[in-house]
Image 1: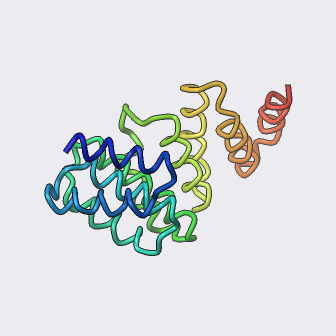
Image 2 (image 1 turned 60 degrees about the horizontal axis):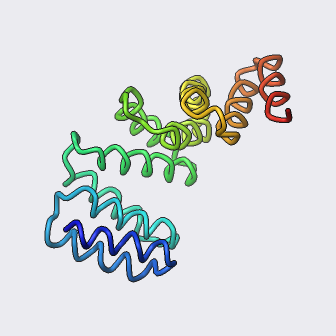
Length: 168
């Protein structure tokens, strides 16, 4: 399994997304609850902007155990995708499932912040943009989204200070 994952990663780095997706699909068929294989499959499909990624993310979340770190990744990605699709009510249901997990990465916090902002849940979005900034002070996009969330909340002086800090 590990060799298959390594091959998937290599294919993705080389830009062979269809090959990576096919290999990951085979890994998933051999081990349906193996979260890392689902992550590879979804990552390739997301990069390809494949229309099936919705269904695959949903299916993956039903078979990968919640205590698997992959489930967290899959849930954040589905939340982010739902935000892009303008499906705010689904973002509001999905985000709390992972929001309070201590092991969210800065990129996952940013994904949640973006999705929650797209759902007009700015207070919750602010929490995640702040966490992304704190974890990675050099993550300029997290700072930018933090400023936008503050602006949407009417906290204009704070938003301006964040934007000015970005420009330094």
